[in-house]
Image 1 (tube, one colour):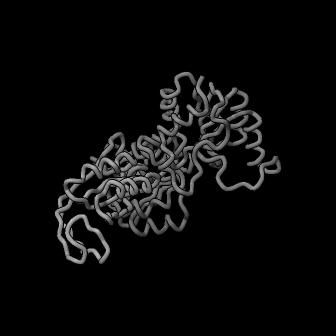
Image 2 (cartoon, one colour):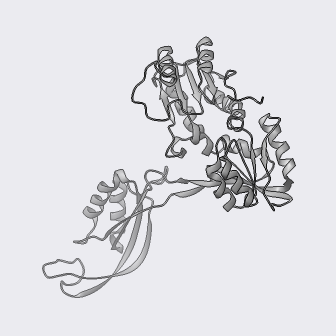
Image 3 (cartoon, rainbow, N blue to C red):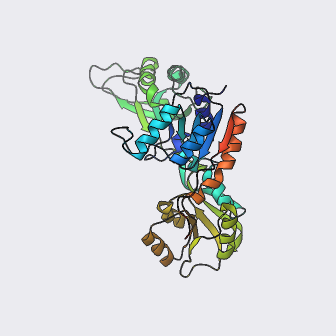
Length: 373
């Protein structure tokens, strides 16, 4: 029988947690990893109604898109709704996992689902996530005589430097010329103390992680023939990913009028109305569309910088909408969870493939909290 740990691994393969926003609280929030599960319930918001649905149907784990625990708690009791909900989950033995912004950012995640509604086009993140493995966060650079480069490379590799994914001993070696002058009392390998010397060297560069840095540098020094080996440690910036990150922008193959975009989103989200603000002086037809699930106003300026003239999200602040209109950007607001809940059936299908011996359901009690009146 699958366990909570299996569920966590399945979710992390769909939405790797390292891509979540720094302010977010994602992953396993409640429960024991070794607990067995046979039923999992998916929802956007874990409300008391969803909890009742879960307990009545014998669910052992809930994947709640929005974190059930978000702000720090100093106590957990039945004196408030949040504490009472957590106590009930623990007493019922129900684990809770939240992917939130990790699922937004992931390739094939919620934001990709949202941008697909508008039609065919070239899709990319509005703000790309960085891709840099833990063994590639630094670069160690040294200079060694050309006949000793293999020895130094092997020593550094044995200490953990030069690992990229499943490859080891990765390095770059460039021939160069170096100069030095040793002070009195030094014992240079080449030339004499007190004299300016020139030597043909190889510049050796190998990536390394912070955890292996000290050992790798020690190995370099031990294998290097120089009395004072040159060692430079350079931090590396992350590589932007083409399919992972915050928000999405699509450059449509065929431009659309605003009315056409509205109709396509109504159909995708299953809503009959949307709040629409048309940008002043905007184009008659739109080629570049940006989107972000939920409350995506923070992504608007970045979407405009990459050319978006229409921005789709759940909700935005009033004054941000006014400013967008003045800049000529049209804004479509469908309601916070309306831009999220439609992804749950797709998530269910993906989890069913990863957890074949587990029943995955989508909550019927998880609904938009407001109604039109």
